[in-house]
Amino acid sequence: MVVTWITLLAAGLGAWSVAAATLPLPDYYLPPPTAVLAAFVDLTVKGILPTYVFASLRRILLAAALGLVVGVPAGLLLGMSRRVADFFYPLLNFFQSVSGIAWLPLMLVWFGFGERTILVAVNYTVLFPVIFNALLGVRSLPPLYANALRTLGAGRWRIVRDVVLPGALPSIATGMRLGLAYGWRALIAAEMLVGAHGLGFMIFNAQSFHLTARIMLGMGLIGLLWVVLDYFLLRPLEEATISRWGLVQR
Amino acid sequence: MLVVAWEVVTRGGLVSALFLPPPLDVARTAWELARDGSLWVNLAASLGRVLLGVVTSVPLAVGLGVMVGLNRRVAPVVEPIVGFFNALSGIAWLPLAITWFGLGWTSVTFIMFNTIFFLVFFNTLVGVRSVPRTFENAVRTLGGSRRHVIFQVLIPGALPSIVAGIRLSIGFGWRALIAAEMIATSTGLGFMIFNAANFHQSDAILVGIITIGLLWLATDRLLLQPLERRTIERWGLVSSQS
Image 1 (cartoon, chains in turn red, purple):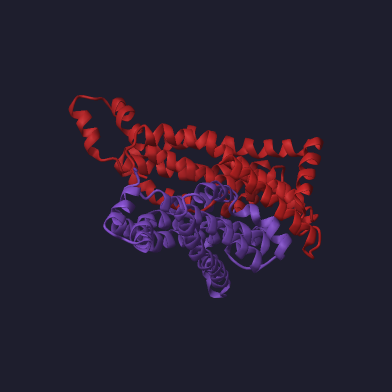
Image 2 (cartoon, one colour):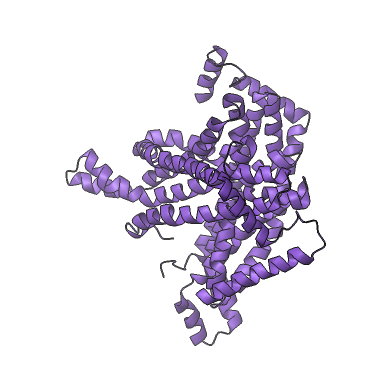
């Protein structure tokens, strides 16, 4: 398996180098892999790359934390009462289906070009799918379980802890995954449009100067960071919920 | 009720109209934009791009996904690669697309293609691979040929995953489109609202946002969800808990 991987990688890089060297295109169309590597070294030495990576990561992690701390409890709370849930369901559904990027123009009017606009857009994009799915998770629980516990004399807190939370967990995990996936892309787009640090800003800015190697480097990092985020943040969350409380068939 | 509250707050002068225009103004702007036709032109441009993205990428992605999924040696190698491009999908392609194709239709279509293609490809691949081998062996034992296995076991078994992938990919594609239109085109709903921001026309922005939200909800509710439900009901015999 590892051998296949290395062979494949080498073949890919080789084909890329050959194509970059032989195709009758201007250099900035397809820079060779060595140029991307050079860009990586150059930007790391100058300290730009670590700053940008850190800026993007900080923004998405902040949004993830907010989703967990605020979004999940809010969704659970709203889902607890049938009437409240019915009222908020269409509203939340609307807000979660409009991406934060669509709000960006209005946010620019509200907050101007700057960090605040990016943060609001990303947090918005993450928060609503999380709240919506938490609410959905609670609402779709069969009342049977809560009634069974209540019959046995359980209090309200007991029901929240032993029925509502575990029952809604798979849906919460889905919401987190969807919210963060949307949020990561919204972040890149917001950084492009608002332009204050970050990987999105880096690749967009590089485009105006035809620094294609930088674009490719940025794209590689964007993909890689998501894989890392997925592996260290989302997978553990899903494993802790779906496998443990394997109520949902996926 | 919410609209009334919105109206009261904005009319009462608590919030300036530049920040949040009253709903009546938004409705009037919507009416004007609809009458002079610009709303429809932009709406048609956006919908056309989504459609173009779907038509070009979905058949290719499903076909390729099934082909790769069939090969037990190739599939585990390809899966993480597609997964990586999946992580990269959407707006991150924009700078490269502009470098290669310039501003305009081609760039946006390229982005839409990448977003939808890799997601559907990935889901098809995973779907085909997660069909329990028992089913395949059962058909084989009963004398089924390879064609039987492919068309009567693997593809139906993968269908729920494929359809889920299509639904998800259009969701991602739609969002990427709005962002791409803001930067790379001069038509479409994304362009409309971003352009309105330059002129501080908050009411036009809100018209755009509401249109975008309703359009996606309508597509999802009337087209994608029924499709998904029907596939799962029809082919839902396959358990994914293998």
